[in-house]
Amino acid sequence: MMLEILDTQIISYVLKGRSGLPLGGKTISAITANEFLMVQGSNLVRANYYIPVLSRLHFPESTDGISPTSRRLGIAHPFRKIVTDQVIVDFGNEHPTIVEYGNLALSLLINKQVSGIFYEAIKFLDKQQRKTIRKRFDFLLENNVKCQPLTKTSVKVAMELLQEFRKEHNLKENFRNSFNDMLILASAIATSALLITEDSLLNKFASKQFAGAYQRQDGIATIDFSQNLPAARRNSREGKGYINKSWRVSFKNYHQS
Image 1 (cartoon, rainbow, N blue to C red):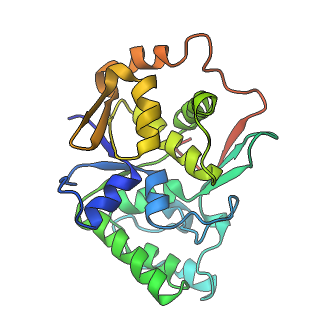
Image 2 (cartoon, helix red, strand yellow):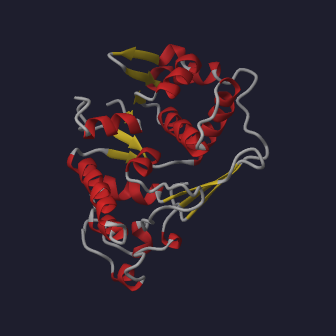
């Protein structure tokens, strides 16, 4: 069965009832999850909240309770960043450094349908924000949406794509938003998936870079990397596609890296 990855706009539209796309069996990138669940904030090297990797808490994967460890960390901020995973992307002097927190940890909670730790992680947020985030998390679990964590391959592909993107397009005012788009696209490439997207700028870029894999119907674009991946990758990397030598990526607390 083909892996189908939804971008952030699509999952948001379905939540709001603006799209009738069925979600059962669909997948989102961990970057989409981090956007959708407001893990990412305005600070590029901090998160709004931190989610522990299950193995670091010695937490039974099949249980929905809370580890005693989390309770000892205090009510004000239940989990510290040291208990979660980090993907650190350093662009030298060209762009600000980005630290992506908890993409593996959040993927595990979504895929194993563990909600208790997630509720604990957001309990210190203000009531309305907590309510919104919890509703979105429950929505993902209720619809059996799966989550694909970042890998070294997907991040490196995203860095290649970013270099191609900025040759023809202006970066978004918030640099992270542009890189998020490339990470979502790269996750589909790295897993030979079908990407379903309504992001206009991402569509414009992908329609040229991956013309043979790109289709658009009824306002929704699909980019099929399940069959066309090798050719699509070659077309986008002719004589280029190398990663800037000053750009680096590192993983911490990341057992799947």
